[in-house]
Image 1 (cartoon, rainbow, N blue to C red):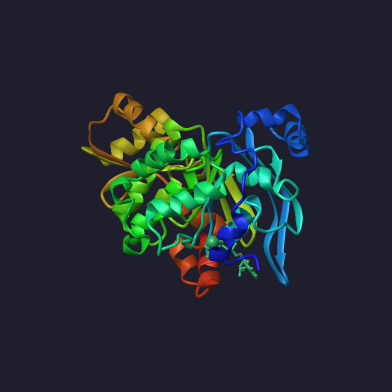
Image 2 (image 1 turned 90 degrees about the vertical axis):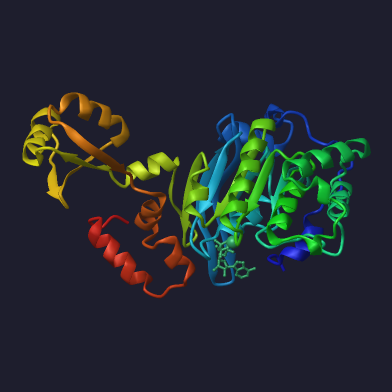
Length: 374
Ligand SMILES: Nc1ncnc2c1ncn2[C@@H]1O[C@H](COP(=O)(O)OP(=O)(O)OP(=O)(O)O)[C@@H](O)[C@H]1O
Ligand SMILES: [Mg+2]
């Protein structure tokens, strides 16, 4: 049984015989001392901390992951974005050694996720989609248990525990039973626990699902602070577009396949230009000037001159300087990540969460609007 979160805590746990809080520099793996390291050195860029090729996972007839390839660079915050059942958790489980791929290969921190499980596990922290805390223990007891399982040196446990609990604002509640924590506090504690053994790669499977916007935003503050403080690579899955904006790069996964992978900005740019609206003293003259000066085709809609242009924000200063017609107001709107998601998966994330109803209709509608993309 590979999927149940709670028993996985035990499955996932690994006693570190050599009791190192952290292995030597991540890239030491690339000196070629292990088979995984050699693979990384040969097959991936020098800074790849995760390298996945041809990954497939089948559960009986269900092909959860259908041949994916990607790399995550050291220090990146990399997001997997996709509707329910897209294969996000399955991919994370393979990377974290909790499930075996049916085909393909995953190298994490220089080690093969199938053949060098303990080495991978030493180097990663994992926050599951479902909680795996022992709620009948205190927060501190949960963390001590984790430290024991991971062989964190005894002398390092207390300071490290305080450091990670301070980071998530729970140090003063360390003696409370976890059952008395709110959902958001439990999530923060799980993140602290995932960090306790100073992993090189932190996997977060929907770290903020079900949390209120304030708690979600504070969890992102911790994550961003963490990145300032520690040399860590973050791989997360999410349904939230605003959360995906925090990622350096995003892979959109749908039906087990990666359908797009790039920075949030590039993904937005890939689906279209920015839309600029201006109010002017003379819209007809402005429209002519846009054509003459910038070669842009503009229309007048809803009492505003409207046109599309790449990098709208950078264009606006030129517009003011060169248009030659007084501008009363301007607005620039970009394609959002929601638009990106829509464009590549044919559904908004909310539709995707709500099941399949109307999905095909949405897809067709969208294809019509985007001229058949995807
Ligand atoms: N242990 C399992 N046995 C059988 N099928 C499974 C198992 N785990 C996952 N699946 C199937 O694999 C597919 C991908 O599931 P996965 O959990 O990876 O999706 P996900 O992208 O994480 O979705 P969600 O956003 O709902 O968490 C689904 O069709 C799911 O039913
Ligand atoms: Mg999932």
